Figure 1 (spheres, rainbow, N blue to C red):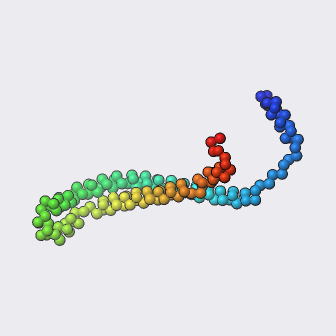
Figure 2 (cartoon, one colour):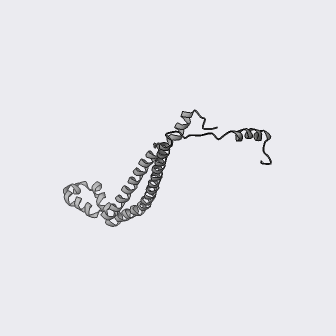
Figure 3 (cartoon, rainbow, N blue to C red):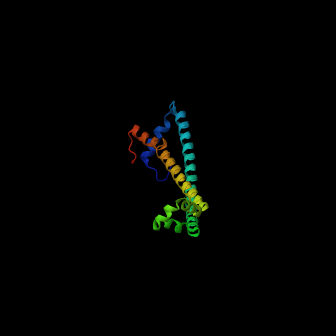
Amino acid sequence: MHQNASFIRNICMRGHYAQPSLHIHPPPDLFEKIMRRIEQERKIILLKRKLAFYFVSFSGSLAALFPAFNAARAGFAESGFGSYFSLLFSDTGTVLTYSQNFGLSLLESLPIISLSFLCVALIWLFASLRFIETLMKNFFTSQHLHTHSDFYRKKNLNVWC
């Protein structure tokens, strides 16, 4: 007996110790509920791993976007694309006269490599965002989040007590 134990509690407990042990039987669907819950937890762990991977992928694509943008900007400055492109607005008569040659000059002055790196970084960024959005939607609409609230709703228990 504990030194601070209540006298009333000790008297009440003595009555319960004298009773024969009760035969408690688990509900018949307990095994199925446990297996379903284990499967849900396994899916949630897999979902969290995928989400972590795509967050790392998003961070990597965001980090790769800045050097790709700087390389594209430097490529445009080095190639003289801006000079050719400004002719389109300043001297439209000459551009219309030599439209085929002007178009080829514009294409030749494009920094294709740096633009392709920028496009890859942007596609990678948006694909990562799309996968993150899909996984977050699956996570928040999964059965896992509804099981506890359904339990309390069925039992009419107050969650805050």
